Length: 173
Image 1 (cartoon, rainbow, N blue to C red):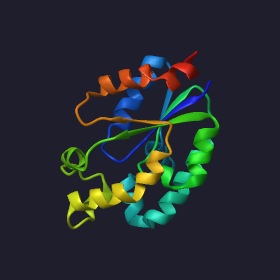
Image 2: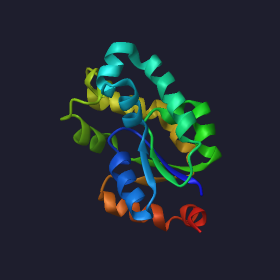
Image 3: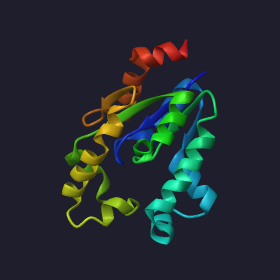
């Protein structure tokens, strides 16, 4: 069976929703950022600091190539994964990609208090930075099979919306 892949900007609920969805469907759950952290023995923040974003993106692409070969899994991807066409191709080969999104204001509220998001912490004006990065990634996010606005939904409500979508129902048959 095909994988269910969650993507979207940081702070949209991919990991939490992915864990709940995997539990509901009795599937394995993989978070690409967690896989990279385990492989490199450092947090994403430390990885960005030590090797920079371009090298991190290389590790991310390698991770996606491996994980996308799995079946019957729920995969949560980092927010920049779909910017690379190679990642999208690999994930689509054996999965359906769902974009979780939220308004810049909600993202800012959810993320700014945490110190684990290197892209947010390096921005002089985080809210404007979020808006700019969202705009840069918009076309990549639009190529997903479908999208769910997580602004005013609990993670459980997002899972319900995913499971009710026709494309997901079709792959679960």
